[in-house]
Amino acid sequence: MTYGYSDDKEAVQKRLRRIEGQIRGLQRMVEEDRYCIDILEQVSAATRALQAVALELLDGHLDHCVADAVRSGGGESAAKLKEASAAIARLVRS
Picture (cartoon, rainbow, N blue to C red):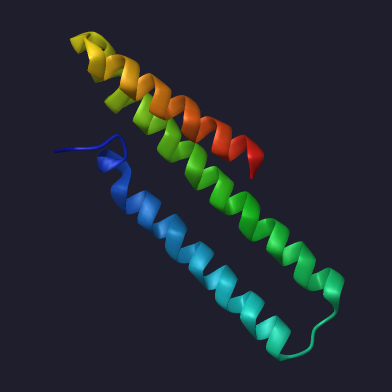
């Protein structure tokens, strides 16, 4: 089975590795007793980076998984739409 991110898998992994580096940098900042605001700015940057990845994955899911289910019709399309709606709601709350 292929997923919406399959064509961009390398790019997604590269972005996640970059975010992983940001998180390690945050750990180092705390370890080095850096100024709170500086750490918070980096937390904000890492959060935005994760949100960007989430939006990219959601876009791929809608273009691929949901669109395929809607074209096929039946109960699966309603389930995929409901699943996508729930994912969007979780992203909005975060």
